[in-house]
Image (cartoon, rainbow, N blue to C red):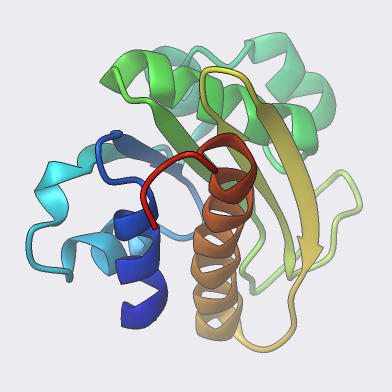
Length: 162
């Protein structure tokens, strides 16, 4: 994970990054801040474990949360967009999902995770299905979020120094 976090920070040099995390509970931020000097890129994160925090701090529409639940693509996207705005960062990544032990009332099984990404030109969310116990799902979600940042950076920041 350290190598991946280092690569994210290297690719975002000169930019700022923030996170909005639910099921990972700060795991992305922990991976990034384990890298010395990460504060030049990583601004911080919001752990939005409840719908109330998703709404109040990230601006996620409460109607959306009620109708679709917290574990869906539109919520992941809204979390990323809201984090970017709230923390004034160039890039944001968000994670919302079910690490276990149970699924949700909307029919999502354990291991369903949506990861959102937003920067000045791109905003997207993707669905993932991870396996294993609670900790395994959380670790896989952190890794996938870092990989998504890299994937989007390669497209959006291709002019940055290698």
